[in-house]
Image 1: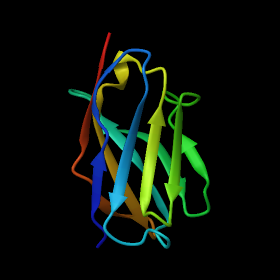
Image 2: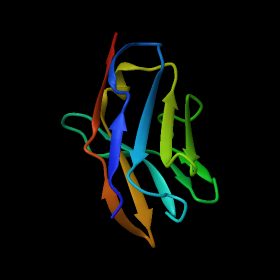
Image 3: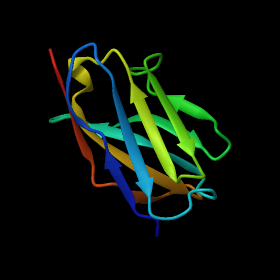
Length: 116
């Protein structure tokens, strides 16, 4: 089972940007989809962005237009770039992988805090 490790979280000022990376322990070439969820305190988990192995991308309405997800099958990484950050982007961000419709792996999460 592929292991996922996130990095890149931290404290960012509102209006700033960040880059979250998810490194896989093995090839992601055949993984159907990979993406990011986030969960803020007291809130439900929210799907932020997903990219398929066909490079189809989808974003939550809350981040659309100010986020980009891209997948590097050669480096076995998935990266989420976010711009124009808002306080409501504060959350723990989790990388995940889906294979045959099943969530097969989750990262440990990385905290993102946006200060206003």
